[in-house]
Length: 188
Ligand SMILES: [Fe+2]
Image 1 (cartoon, rainbow, N blue to C red):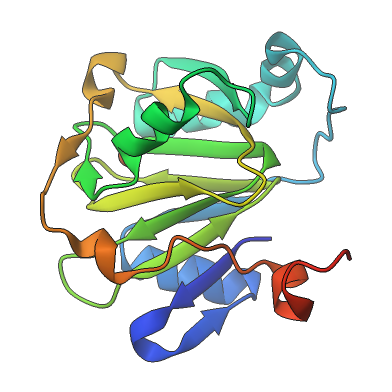
Image 2: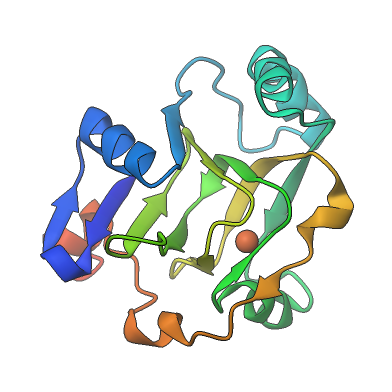
């Protein structure tokens, strides 16, 4: 289950319906797909895409997405820091950013045109759709691992366009999942 923090309001949302409603107000779609098709950690990209074939087909129809793939990055990924540096500054894309998380965790910050910044921690089972033009930035959590299904309308639209607002500098890129809340990352 995702966790949404709203630092400017001192609020944290962990209830599925409350998260979906608050994100919808900012134009962000949030769904839970798990445990409809659990896949083993060893599953290949093709097996993952097969398992979620129905959901992917529905999203393609709803959003005009034409392709889907699986991204898999971790601490051993060559050039990981350079890759992350492209996305941890506020930017937007000319197409939607659609992610269904299979493994690992990530932290999206969304800055709506009106209203406070939303920090969204995503974990396995979370689907997030960030519409084109939305100002946002992304960080990995401390495990530096994420595996996710991505959908594209046109992969050429995926290039980040930077706002150069510096807004990301006012927010800690730190994940605060249940383990961290319980005691600084203690084992759960
Ligand atoms: Fe992005």
